[in-house]
Image (tube, rainbow, N blue to C red):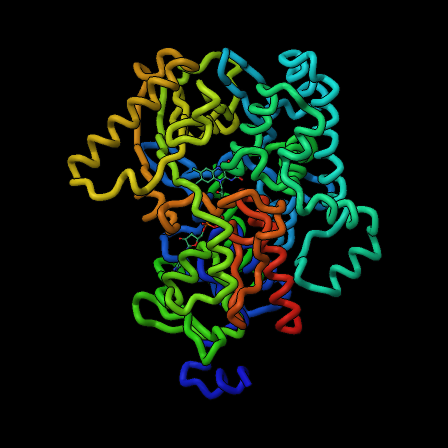
Length: 509
Ligand SMILES: Cc1cc2nc3c(=O)[nH]c(=O)nc-3n(C[C@H](O)[C@H](O)[C@H](O)COP(=O)(O)OP(=O)(O)OC[C@H]3O[C@@H](n4cnc5c(N)ncnc54)[C@H](O)[C@@H]3O)c2cc1C
């Protein structure tokens, strides 16, 4: 029926197997996987380069990552190294630089702690701060390993594909049962089973918050199992040449496999034939048709902007009742004189002065200094410091341009004051500064309200409420951080593998 309606369409010659709206890592992994399976694929990206939140920009000799820079998924063994696998699938290579420490925490009451790649060294250091909880600490993190070991023993594809589920269950019954047990669980439940010290529980909260942007009692155990273990297994690895290289290499692989990408191609509408998605219309008015449409835009953008909001399917309304937009970020992209950073400074830092402020706007401060791993990203003698902290778009609306600039300057001043505490002399050593607000994220990352992604509105049963890739509209799929298993480059790569797998089965590839 659909094939007939497309075949008779006047633009049938522009028909693809799959159109992917957006070239974030989720979209690109889907696209490359499908192209590698022989599908005719078109990626439409509204910006001038690929990558979305894992893109980059250049200013005065500095090569800044727009967002992500603590990268999981580049390990060399197991099954959870999904970025490595995605690049290999389209025969492209990317050099990475191993980071020996995931995070250097600077916490209330002067707590200084490094999460070393070496698991025992990390447990030792944390145990030195909470000696009365040594056993609970080990029991908690060991339980995270149980989740990880289950995930890391099986091929990670679509949980919406019954034959794959049956095969995986047959091959790894114990691992599957293990995962089913953890799927409805949140980290807080498990942590409280082993840990009693309220301050240590606050530390577990920030361990979750720094990637899930919610405390432990709202963070699914499946995601924590990945993050808290893979950092000691595959480790954190920075792509040589900057995070933007991941998307660039995936695009090279996509084109090598016969796929196509267009930039400055903003999709304004998903075209329906009855209740089925059959194509897209660009802001330019141009239309393209495909057997399957995959949206890498957020679910809010997909169902409120690319489709009529007043006809939103019931399943999406239900999802919106369970999940809300997390805040966006205030980002400072700084160039600083190299001698500002003491010898032995780590690449990634988290700064929090008061536990009560962890989830507040400008509460937790995230700092990345990627030039400590790849010095080519800045002029000789200088480093990049990317400092970002949660901020809501509503606080940046309805301002005149001078009010907006003043507000940016004041906010940047507050962040620099906090940075001065860990890097004295930073202010005097500043060479370059660019400030991004939630409005910047909304505009350049093309994300509703500039949000980092969906977070539970209330306590949910682990990851059970997170939608997979199929949607209530036939022929339309979603990929990226508003699908299972959520935010982060390796997580959206998982979503990309799963989406491509489901679409390939539906296309009969
Ligand atoms: C400041 C910051 C720091 C972060 N730090 C880390 C980190 O250290 N480690 C980590 O793993 N993750 C980190 N993340 C999260 C991670 O970057 C994201 O979860 C991930 O990149 C999201 O990928 P995605 O595939 O969902 O799509 P996105 O990156 O959101 O990309 C979607 C793409 O679709 C395009 N698009 C949207 N709508 C349209 C349309 N209508 N037409 C055409 N194109 C469209 C957009 O332009 C964009 O290129 C960070 C994010 C931010 C913002």
